[in-house]
Length: 183
Length: 344
Image (cartoon, rainbow over all chains, first blue to last red; front, side):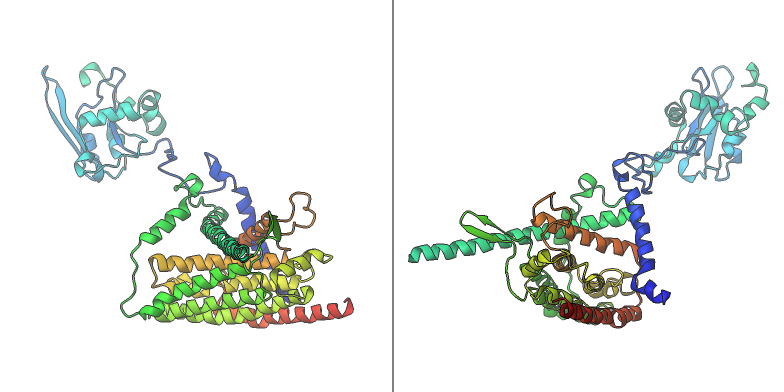
């Protein structure tokens, strides 16, 4: 009898319809809001998605307080890189110092493991939180030294770059006592 | 005298032409925005946004879709029955459009010396006409299925014919109660009889018939949960699998027009037509606005049901039609008859 009544008055259907109506009403004004509360659709290119802090995105070469490149060209990052996409060339500078003449990262081959960041004794390479760097040519993903340094100014300027290692990595750079003559 | 008579005839024809243009124009606009409304409501119920890019909140999306369909390539399969293939969508569209002729949108108002009726053809068999036209539309589906020479389309056509035949009976029987209470098949008279009745809406004394009508209307227009003729997970797209471009658009228009007509029929026969909702008469006088509000509400029900319910299995569909809906409708007729005899 109760089964027949359920069938006759479409009880379960009514329950389901109440659910959809509830969802509809709670999300009714979401399309007019900047941040959706109920509706899950992300309007990505129009409303950019934030990246979590510590996200491993595009590479950058760190600069110190004076705006000079931290990298000394030791080649640790290139040695540990599992996809072997870092190319470093060094030469003797004018005052008999080692000088990095070329630092290249093939970003398309990178696997974003951040082992280079971990390996670097000077905290000279970082992965920024920037992730929108699509381009039209393969060559454009071959980031050379000026572009990597520019990335630092663009995405790691100020406190962000200063605190990056303290926040996300054991600051290995501090385990090494750096003297003037070391670099 | 002669000239005055001729002038009157001419004016009459002009009036009819204007009315036709208005009904077709507003009808097509409603169809276009019915798709937008449906997509929006379904999207929000599924916590999505729906169309947002073309125009403000996707308001121009139906127009963009229409333009796209117009410019698409019109493909007729090599092994299709060419002429039947071409006629089928026209039959569907014609059947749906001609149903609009007998739907009374409002009572009547006087424009100078002329009385403007809210219906194109105030015929005494309006109800029968709509039922006839809605089943004529099924011919279009079957012909489309047959002419496509594709097994998916053919199965879709067969399913639609079986479904429409079974649910037509339930729908017709559910409307018999309304005819008995109002004593007329003229849709305008049905609305007037409802306004004169004690409960104002036939949906109250005929609630069983109303439920049967709503379910049968879903099945008649091939909507979820009875959309087996176009079950996309089984039959690609059903009877219009092989159609593209504007022929596809005609099927699409016919389907949505059918929904709007079924909503209008429900409004006229059960919800008091153009008369105000009981208790809200102070808000607005009787008129086309009340009719539209009720049609929109019923259309919303269509969409709401579509979001909520999964598709029935084919044997379930038949079982509901023959074993539940038809007996219920018959019982309703019987009860209405007894009621009429006891309280004449």
